Length: 295
Ligand SMILES: Cc1cc2nc3c(=O)[nH]c(=O)nc-3n(C[C@H](O)[C@H](O)[C@H](O)COP(=O)(O)OP(=O)(O)OC[C@H]3O[C@@H](n4cnc5c(N)ncnc54)[C@H](O)[C@@H]3O)c2cc1C
Image (cartoon, rainbow, N blue to C red; front, side):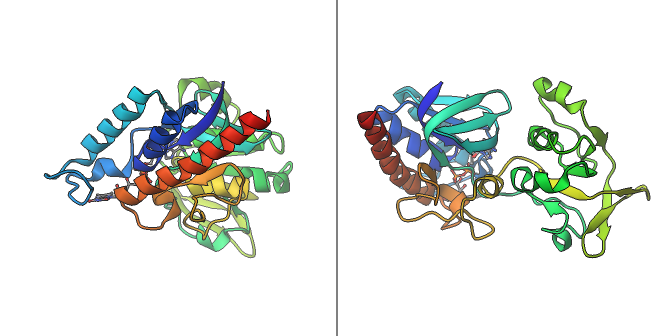
């Protein structure tokens, strides 16, 4: 199925964009889970149009109903990879989608893997990007740090390079969809808590809390969900390390790929996300209309 506008994120930024693209007659889908930052906000009283405080939950539910009523397709799923071919290819836990334009509105990246010495070995054995660095680990012994579908996806991306792959969950319960359970069987699984990473110039391995050491040539981090920064690393989107860099039209450096809301790190507020989503939609609508006109 080819979408005109595929929006990753069901928070205010993504839904706002969808409201505009769908009303401009673009075939629009919004993919995400129900874990917007706004769910944590009990009372919002600085958003336009509400005389009394409104809960974040209520704002989210109403916004999503509005977009769905207008014709946007809301898909409950998690995106684990984006690639640019002729169109964009969006890989999710439960399916693959194609789109002419994409908006990343995944909110602020939150989960930092809680492992000692991680930063010390970044770029020297620790990688956040299988697409970028998998090749360096041909026939080597690697680990993937994670416990979700995203981690399984990343481990699968390493299979063309090496079969020696261990998934380290760091004592987190494995949270993997049924359709990935068979893939999971291709990796060793280690569910023990990691005490620390060790090495000299480069990573050499990790020490488990139980005291045992595991030697490793590389460790790929895929902890929690794929964040805007994971997508950026894979696709070469320019960031400042924490947030995606978008211009005043919310364009990233990849043509057809936009970013809005907390993932741009500008001013993390509902009103800003809603505004940025609307701005991004203008360019997405223009691009799609031009593509269709040019055939
Ligand atoms: C406690 C608290 C109180 C706040 N109070 C206020 C306030 O009073 N006023 C105010 O204006 N703002 C407030 N905020 C900030 C506000 O919640 C955010 O600015 C706003 O929610 C950002 O919107 P967003 O669309 O960018 O991201 P989010 O609302 O965080 O939505 C992100 C979406 O992306 C999805 N997603 C993430 N990764 C993936 C993936 N890999 N695949 C698919 N989907 C993915 C998530 O499931 C979610 O649907 C508060 C925030 C918090 C935490």
